Image (cartoon, rainbow, N blue to C red):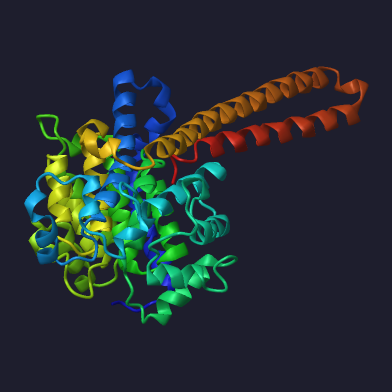
Length: 445
């Protein structure tokens, strides 16, 4: 584990961001041309977005079947139906842990993802640290009351320590740093991976934004460099799948998984300080089988690189049901691992690839659809508001230009009047340009 404080890690961010601003300019420019996209392409993106979110929720709910089991325990309890797993199979094992959730319900992993989606919608596309921290604290205390929750269930020990720190509500980054250092800079659990679906979707055509948001979220909850690398790798993978760049496609039109994984590794590895750290990341990212990840390893089931490795392994697969069932039967932190596999494969294959029985038996499916519809309405309304305001600025500038020209020809009538209009003209011109460049800032990360 490399030493070095928060400032050092912050400096490491600039490498990948500079690379992106050069390499991804054309991809990010498409964000301003969304209205010109073919209807078929828009439909594909929406299906992949819904496949990503549903993949997380379904993988989370399905993984609950074997969470905390060893591989042999998973085989003992579900071996007879391991190729026909359904959400209702949770009734087969009624231990204390699984009884906390109803049949077909997801766990805290998807709950926290929804909290982040709500934060983005409530804050006009941004993720301010303090409001997000307070929303997490509120969820931990109450859950989602409209779903019958009385508190957030399944919170891990590290996350509990962070949100219960006295400074978390006002200085979340500082609180997360203190908790991480108190743990000997060792804790690198997979908590942060729950947020990667929306981190990859939000600003997916601007990889610089995706990386900045991922690192910002890590600073709020888990400032460990391994968490930063894993979060960035997973988030940019989702974004690249949505972009569907020619360099990430084979001649047949299928995704080139190795090219995507290689690029994700390049972005993530720049956040690590030593060769040994990069090699460890490489070993997990480029794994070719679940056996290599040892997902039920005692004492390390929640290690973030294991979950990342599952996601990258899933990217190479083609059968949604078979892939998720294989992850479930590995045991360990199965809900997080299966959610990662479901997220990546849902984004790659789209919503239609998810078995209908899994979607239909997801407990709060209608409520989840409503939450996603709110985010769609926000994106549309936010774009319309920005365009209207930009039009207003242009109209104001045009009006001031006419007044300026009028006063220029008749300035001898009143020099003070001419001076006043000149000042007003240049002020409005500066205002217009400032807003115009702010409106296209996603291009220049």
